[in-house]
Image (cartoon, rainbow, N blue to C red; front, top):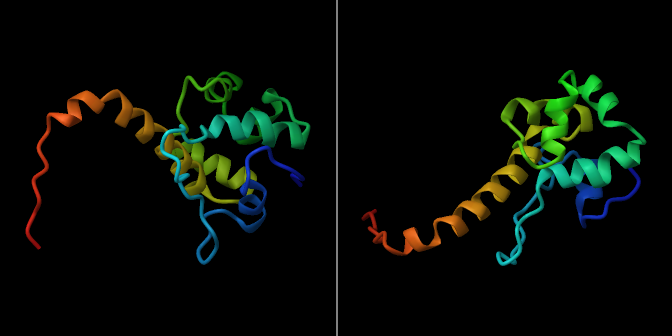
Amino acid sequence: MIRSFRHKRLAELFEKGGSVKGRREYRVPADRRRAPTHPSEILREDLLPQLKMSVSEAARQLRVSRQALHRILAGTSAVTPEMAVRLGKFCGNGPGLWLRMQQAYDLWHAERELRGELEKIPVRGVAA
């Protein structure tokens, strides 16, 4: 069992099951100046050390290659829906938590990369 996390609220989310119906879910931080935490940070800095598990052993239990898991841990690959399903099963908290963390991270970076371009796009309201 994971005993402590560096990131606030994660222990509670992991213990309560993250995205399981009727339970609390991960929310994007209100401070949009700071990038959301990449799921790889949770795996690399909290989960694997608490489990005293090597990347090779975690990859074996997740039934993926060590290289695939290493790319995620290094932040060079995103958590895909397939990997989210595996991580959700492995951690017992469902895939939704992992996908939402990845989505929040990707969206934050995309908004910054496209900031100049987005300023040139007019807002067209749709009548209800």
